[in-house]
Amino acid sequence: MITLVFGRREQGKTTLAYHLALQKETRVIVDPRGQFRTTSDILPDEVGLYELLDEREEVIIQPRGNPKEVFARVSSVVEDWLRDNPGAQFVFLLDEARIFDTPSVIPDDFEYLLRMAPRNEVDVILTAHRPSDVSVDIRAIADFWLLFQMTQEHDLKVISERCGEKVAEIAATLPEHSVIVWNDAKGTFRVSHDSEKWKHDIKNFPRNVKEEGERAWQTA
Image 1 (tube, rainbow, N blue to C red):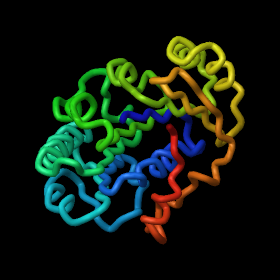
Image 2: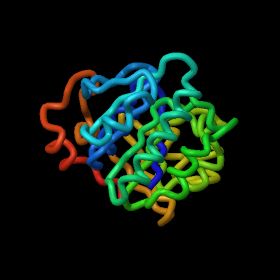
Image 3: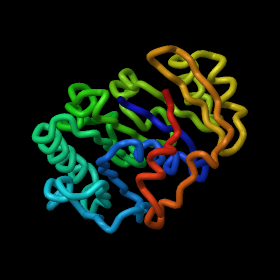
Image 4: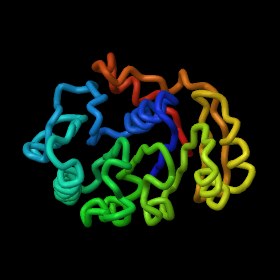
């Protein structure tokens, strides 16, 4: 399943994305801004990732060097691990997708995760400020769009074309920390105003990851 989370800074898109990621047993988080401290397993690139995935619930990648190159290599390791571990309940979270410039190029191995991995086993979550930060090809196959307040005319036009005028109208006046959940498969939406449901301190270890995952907000 593919989920896109769009919103400005300080609205809560990263913590919401993490909340959704907790629904899966194994997680890789690509964190170019160095925000996450939810585990001690933090790597600068793909080296050692495969081995950690055999042992750990969560691994964070905080790229050093060229983030796009690191992203491509991490995607390759993730694909290899998933092929070797059929049935794994896995999530790949790409925070601040604009940094990885998917409108210009989508790494082949990431393309596999998007299009070929079993959607009931593998989730891909991307966060970004604006829809244009994510490739049209990815937006076209996304299962959910999670939208915080949007005011830019071009962004609202994209939302209107994909989700309908009503959703765009709501997005333009949405209160702070509220989010629209657009279900693309069903063509339906709902609005959540209760950010406490998905609030997490991502700069510290979670007290109980299993418990937090069990209470994860269901988007379906």
